[in-house]
Length: 342
Ligand SMILES: Nc1nc2c(ncn2[C@@H]2O[C@H](COP(=O)(O)OP(=O)(O)OP(=O)(O)O)[C@@H](O)[C@H]2O)c(=O)[nH]1
Ligand SMILES: [Mg+2]
Ligand SMILES: [Zn+2]
Image 1 (spheres, rainbow, N blue to C red):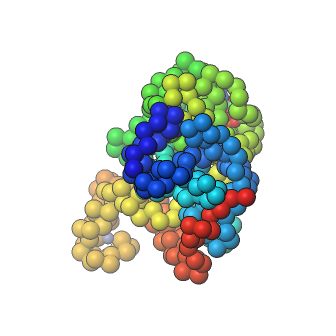
Image 2 (cartoon, helix red, strand yellow):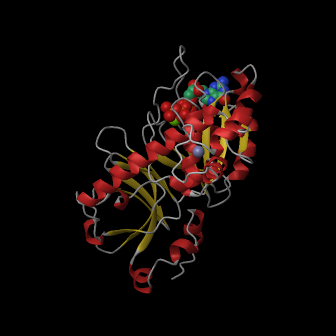
Image 3 (cartoon, rainbow, N blue to C red):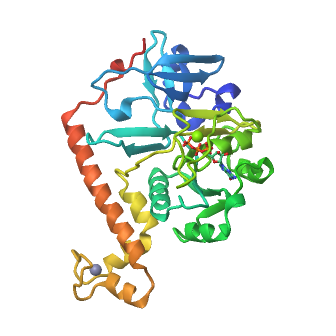
C-alpha cells in the first residue's frame, strides 16, 4: 500500500517500504524512521511525529530483530513496533568474545569510508570497509581527510584507488566548508549517507562542515599516534539543507566482517578468478603444481600483500559466519509481538 506523504519522502520513505505496508496497517499504523540510537532509547521521526521510544525488545529477539538507526518502523495503536524489511543493512561482529552481531545502520544509500592522510592511514582497514560496503550493496566513496596537514596527499589517494578499479576517492580538508561542498551532491534529498571510519578521522567534522554548523562535538586526536578519542558515542542522522541525511557513527575500535562472502568475492574478484584456474579445485596456493595464483605472483600481476589480505579476511569471515550460525541455532527469532515498547 503506497503512503504518499512528502514529509515521509523527505525522511527517505519510498516504494520499497510502502510496498510492505498492508491496507489495514496503512489505516491504523504510522511509519516512523529511527533517527538516533542512544543506550536503551531510540529517537524516531515521521509525518508530524518526533519522539523518543524505549528500544527494549524481548531478550529472545535475535540481533537482526532489534531496531537500528535508519530503520523504518510501523507503530500500531497499541504501541507495538514492526521493523520493515531493510533495503540495506550494515552489521559487524561486536568486539568481545561472545560473537554477538551488532547492527550498525540500515537503509543507507551511500557510505563514506572516511580515513585521514596521516600515520593512522591503513590499507587493510579501508579494504575491510570496502568489503562491507560491497556486501551490503551500497555505493562506497572513500573520503580522505586532513589533506591540509599532509605532505603528499595524492599518495594516499593512489593507495585507496588501488583497492578496486573505479573506486571513487575524494581528498578533502574536512574543516573547509567550501572544499567539502562537492560531497553534498552524493547525498540527494531523501537519501542517506552513512559515515564509517576509525575514531578521529573527521566523520563528525565532515557532517558539521556539510551542514554549515558546529553542532556535533569533535575533539583533537592524540598527538603521538594521530588516533582519535572516541568523541561520538551514538549513531545519529543529521539533515542537510537540501534534504539529504548524513548518518554519523562512533569510530569503531575493532571491526570484524561476518557474512561477507559476496563482498569479498567482489573486492577480490581477480584473485577469485585466478583461483578457479588452478589445476586442483582445492588448491591451497601453497606450492601445488598448476597453481594460477603462484603463476600470477611470479609474473607480478598480483602482490603477496594483497593475497595475504584476501586470505586473512576470508578466514575471518568463515570463522565469524560459522560462529554466528551456531549462535542463531541456539537462540530463537523474535516474533512480532515481542517487539513492544514501554
Ligand atoms: N586540519 C584538519 N583537521 C581535521 C580534518 N578533519 C578532522 N580534523 C580534526 O580531527 C579531529 C577529530 O575529528 P572528529 O570529527 O572528531 O573525528 P571523528 O571521526 O568524528 O571521531 P570519533 O567521533 O571519535 O569517531 C578534530 O580535531 C577535527 O577538527 C581535516 O581535514 N583537517
Ligand atoms: Mg565523531
Ligand atoms: Zn592455487
